[in-house]
Image 1 (cartoon, rainbow, N blue to C red):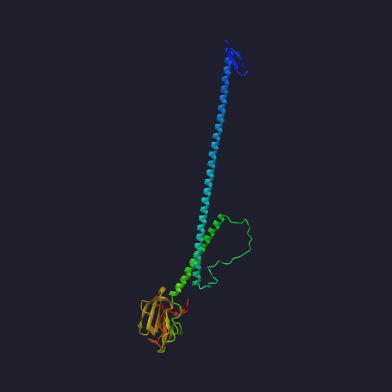
Image 2: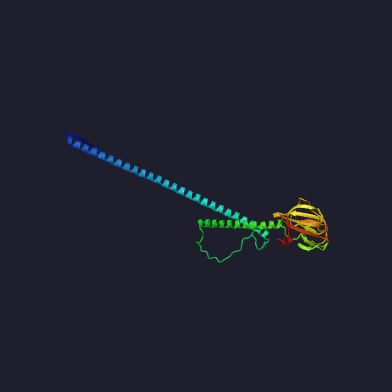
Amino acid sequence: MPMRILFLSEARKCTGSIDISIPRAAALGGLAVVGLGTVMAWGAYLYGQQHAIADSGGATNVEMRAMLEAERREIADAKAEQRAHLDALALKVAELQAHLMRLDALGDRLVEVGKLDREEFDFSTQPPVGGVDDTAADDSQTAVELSAEMAQIARTLADREQKLDALEWLLMSREVMAEVLPSGKPVKKGWLSSGFGKRTDPFNGKKSYHRGVDFAGKPGSDVVAVASGVVTRAERVPGYGNVVEIRHADGYSTRYAHNKKNLVDEGDVVSKGHTIALLGSTGRSSGPHVHFEVHRNGKVVNPARFLRPR
């Protein structure tokens, strides 16, 4: 049975109709369904593409943020490493400055001990240097090269410091030994009037053994210690008159006899050059002088080898 579809046109004031059979209507309906499905499928495709693009853009943003964060971390690490290098260089500079201060102090001490010319050996100023400038503009040293050079300088300074310490110890030892071992004359003013050993006795004309040396001088002039030490005897002794004996280092002792007056007491500590008595003529003496003896480990030795200042 055919289907009739009526068309009404208000503009033209007319009507019309189309007779559609059942098979034709079914075909048209099928085509409509297919078209609608196609439209829906295309819409779904477009929607999916848009979401895919959006998702892709989101993933790209995440990757970019991750890359930026990684760059920030690398920059922070580089800055930390640079600060560590600068701190290490600062420590090296401080170490070198400490070495230089120590060497300056040692130099001043050695100039003093060695009695050197301070104008010639002035450790408070930089040594004069010079030369033609032939460096290139791009010859600046790297941090690694500077660090290596500073380390080498530090090793050199440490070596020089050790050697100067040894030299200072040697000079100080000599200075100490010169202070505590007998050296020089027992008078500030006077002359050698009798030597050591066999001689003719001035009182009986016989051969005798003189155990020291005599220095004649003005009565009441100074008798001085020839080395630092401890006074072990300060009294009047038969034959020697007023006597002072001093014990020194390394088994040495000295004796000063015929003094007009002793100025020290037993147990006193005296230094080299200290006035210990006044020159006189007490005891068995023919005139004002000081009888000077040197003993080593209890045995008398010739004082002649000690009369020159060390």
